[in-house]
Image (cartoon, rainbow over all chains, first blue to last red; front, side, top):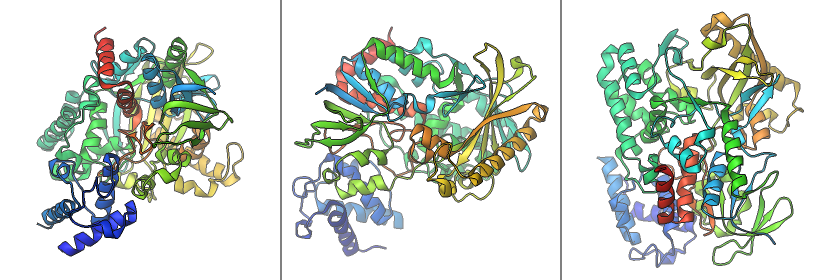
Length: 86
Length: 500
């Protein structure tokens, strides 16, 4: 089972490697849109990059639409990883 | 400098559809096509003055109230496009060659279900559950109804289950699994790679009806050309976009064409292979994640095609029919580029009228062919290929003939091959990367390139966007057209055309 620390590390890697965002900006309270500068069109690329990084399928459902901050996103990944682990 | 409201890049069915939709809604449109004529794989070719299909052989969607019927009505081309339905005994046959098993299934979803019951009496529950699942997917796919096009559908479980997972949950009968996944050949993705939902969207249409067209894909091309002349559409062949310049606020200001001209346009839609699109757009406007997503798309396979005629037989008893020959029941093996054994093979019999006015009994046989297998000849061009390439072709033609005669021994003495084409032929004539038949492979969990790009006046449609095949390609253009024309205007336009 992947740890919370590991999820945070891998999620941050996606933002650094695939969106070229500075590491210092990657704090849990950072808003993905207003602070990290992603727009609605980037969301699809973010989902694709996360699916690859974590080897998961991310469903287009209500949960993903409520995500606003990096912390929300990391918790969401942890939840789906746990669901798969069950 | 010339100015347009919209540029459409790619003159295949998707580009033709979008061009006409925009022109009918008052836009000044320029259609660019890299090849010497529009139509792409809809184009037919003549051998001995007999017409043969290039890449468009049959389609779903022509049943009453079917999505294709509705799209043609909206475009005002229904009159010129006449379906010839494949129905009745022998018109849709599946053959498992190794076991010498032949399944003659009827058209119409209910008839298909009952045919399967007859062949698999122990599996009626599995068959009924499968059909019910296909119907459920259709119910939850609003874009398969033109009046609801562009309304986003809710994701359903079947979007996240592979066809293989669903089949494995229903039955252990490999022949039944093979039959239910046989239409994977018609969209280029294996049962383990495709979502059940996408399979259902395509196969479900083909269970309902399969039709060829009078005059094949040329009927479409002529119909579109007629309409274009009514709306003053400009078509520029042998030309595409080579560069996008004067980009301000993420909007392209000028488009440089390969013929040396520079033009301006409000918007531009690409209907070509996604990886070809990125070649002409400046990379600095795209994030790495976006470029990685596009680079990860895998191109679908193409086909090795054999065209010929059967002489001295009665045309009134010659098709139209499709026989699908499957060397094994596992479509995952058959559609893998790692395939070492024989490929699947579709054989189409139909009667065509030659330029001399006579009826000819024609045969088109085609099986998946994987570009990497022909890598050694990839640098060669039409008419200048090395001798061993022609040997390879001759061997493949020979095997097609043998398999054809096994199924139809009555034609053994009077079948004549007139032409054969490999993926290299398709690549060089149609400008399709790797000679692919279905654009990119649309795998489960994948997000295609579709709609608006990060450059705000650039859009993407085409068969790689929504669903492969003629219906999917046209649907993608209707959805992009709705965005470009405006929801309310478009909805009134559709309603007006359909209620006529």
